[in-house]
Length: 461
Image (cartoon, rainbow, N blue to C red):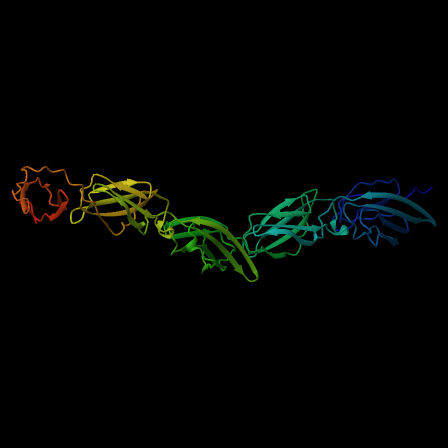
């Protein structure tokens, strides 16, 4: 009796096949690598081989049949799939009798021959980009896919390769408004990757020109510095700025504009100690981005004196003064006080100065009936003093004269009709004003013109 044909599976050297050895003694089956070939040895005159695919992919041509006749000793089954199961049936004809045996083969993993498809950008901003993809076509996987290898970078720069188990990847630290390419390959359990997909080329959006530095160069100028919005330095930036300061008389709805191609700009001609709104706008094609900031310029010395310095009241030894604040646009800082200087006109009248914190002042200890000059200046919280006002002239009042006594009694004629008298009075040391002498109902006024006059003759008619 002839034994049942035996099919022995073993490693082979050719690709895309399974090794099959045929004998009369027994069946043996061992798992072999995908893409290998089987040699068929037979003692039968005719052999029929049937193989049926039982893998994970819905393959159209899932089975095949081949026949070997005569003295052939081998047969190659081509186009088998790795990481799959095959049922192989072997039928041999010997002396008019057919003998048949079957074996199930599990092929090992092979290198994927396909690449992930439908690589699509999912979400992005100027510095990061997320892409996702579909898995490798099943019949091209040829193994269990364990992860994916992503290769990305700028078109002309070096590429970075990373591995992920997800079917999506986010690249960070990208350069705004720059072309990047993304390629994806599948990796099997053995860490072997298949081919990379064709590159997906995508440009990152225009970046926001984020303001990173606001440097005050002087009380009237500011240097702005911002991050670039692109990777090639060809973006045009427009700087818009408008006064939003403390002084209502200077607020305007209009904006000033400067256009530059660098990532910094010096803005001059600003007002001291004032608030400005500033916008840096990047424009590239149809894309526009912007960032905003508020800038406060430093203080400076007041650029104008206090207004309307006036005398509000006076005595023979005091003068009271008042004034208005420095106009807002000329304050250039927080006004913390005032310096008022005064002196007798025609002398070094700036030698006496007082610091005060209100808009009124009373000078005391002045000389009577004397012309004084006053001027006032404002100072800010940084102890910067502005210009002085024009001098304001004030004359102190003359004092009440001291009482004088009549030294000699008047002599009166006997007839009592016509009379004359001679009297001696004390004259003030300063010949200022008038001396008034009263006698009965008569009153005479004499102007004192010089110091030596100490005797006066009054004639009554």
